[in-house]
Amino acid sequence: MAMAGAHEGTTGAAVLGLALMSEVAAIVSERLGRYGFPDGHPFGPDRLAAFVREFAAQGLNRRVQTLEPRMASDEELRSFHTPTYLQFVREASASGTGLLDAGDTPAFRGVYEAAATVVGATLNAMNAIMRGECRRAFVPIAGLHHAARGHAAGFCVFNDCGVAIEQLKRAGLKRIAYVDIDAHHGDGVFYAFEEDAAVVFADLHEDGRYLYPGTGAASETGRGPGEGMKLNVPLPPGADDAVFDEVWPGVLAHLNKFTPEFFILQCGADSIGGDPITHLRLTPKSHGRAARDLAALADELGHGRVLALGGGGYNRANIGQAWAAVVENLL
Image (tube, rainbow, N blue to C red; front, side):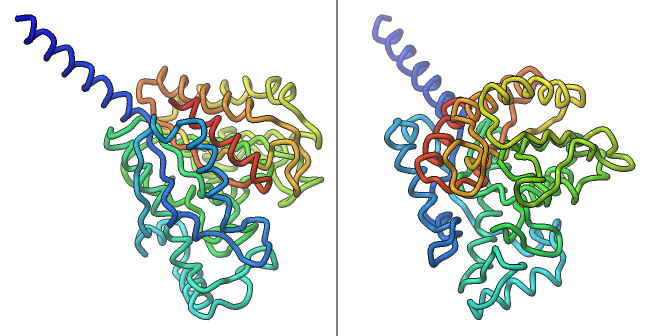
């Protein structure tokens, strides 16, 4: 009997351990790192490694399950992007020359495949959550929120956030929350779903009068069926954790009002102080709080679903610390 009891206890511990391991997943495959621009571009191919080093140093790699990326299919990409734009990127990817937008996003050989892999990674993480294989997930090289349906913008070729939202809608979800704390306004997501009553939108960003893309005024609250469902919170240059703490409860209240069935968090690290191309002064504490509070709200709503996407960030130390704080607080 004693041996049987010990065996049962061991089995119970193993089951508990499996459950804990299944709570959070992350995608850290080197294939994600292929999405990065050469020749000293701020969004370089070394960004993934900057996160992975901190991820391992904090032992987070032993506390989460890992998922693999894949290339998104043409059908999946077409759920958000136009066929004409996809063909344009294919041709630029084959030649490896030219620009994909007005100047920020250069083509390189294989950019189509690299960008489609970012989308596929986001979709794999999203689907793992929807299947109940984990409750939350993090994808570091993802959250490419500037790409529009028909063009690239701001280092973003394909908008994995937008594709994920479209796929969640096709899966039958009626309310999807998109929350963005990147320093830059998530214009590619906002304008794509400005009139969509299925998408609850909340974006904290540096005031567009001082930073690309120049959008996201507080007066932009949605149109038509989406009116009142979109919250833009422009922050002044130099805004710190105290400012974040002041405005964040309003974001949570906005989200809670619409009881979303899935949360996407774009947690760009370029809102951390010391980023070379932005002017906010948050610390990783704010990123951790955002992840923790959204996870708690998702649990309160009964589903627990949170997908966090890395977004921007061009100070490599900030990337590691902010995104590690996100994973830690999703656990």
